[in-house]
Amino acid sequence: MTLLSRESLLNGNYLESFKKTIGIEWWSEEQILASMRETLAERPCDGPVWLFAYGSLIWNPQFKFVERAPALLEGWRRSFCMRIIAGRGSLQQPGRMLSLAPGGQTQGLALRLAEESLESELFMVWLREMVGGTYKPDWATLKLNDGRKASAIIFRFNPQCPFHENDDSIETITPLITSAYGQLGSNSDYVLMLHKALNEHNFHDDYVEALTTRVKRINSAIR
Image (cartoon, rainbow, N blue to C red; front, side, top):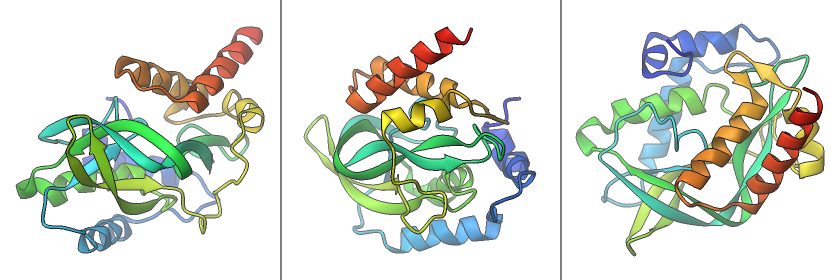
């Protein structure tokens, strides 16, 4: 069983794997559930709830949804602006994780959840994304590829989080990413899987493209 699986989310192993790392006050299941319910209480309309997948949720969602559609999020861009000391980094060698920062636009997948299982399935997402409370869950309007608009939950940067980093430049983050490793694997592998997933869906991101090129170059040089 892989560490990031539906089973590990349900039995608590995923959450426990993070609590072995000191240096951050990891959230309890009660805190995670409260955050999810606070977000749902701010639901802007009575229509269906969508989730915007822009990172690993594209290729490894681990929750059940009833519809998937390519979507565009305006006003936010991909950014490796979150310092990580667990998952794909460590206290000794912190890495960087993907978030959404203000500006630009992002292509991703809109995933629609069924109303009858909304809370139980959304909790699967919260357990993986909010283990440290490092993201800010928010609502945004997506433009689907068929012309529809969808109200969706996004996980964006949290400027109040102590792990938020203002400098997300390729020059700064590449050496960090190529050196970091944690219980979920290497930070480099995440970048490569992200690049592969974007290509498979015909999404283009200049930032991810440039980062992937640099990561591959450094990894080739040290082998």
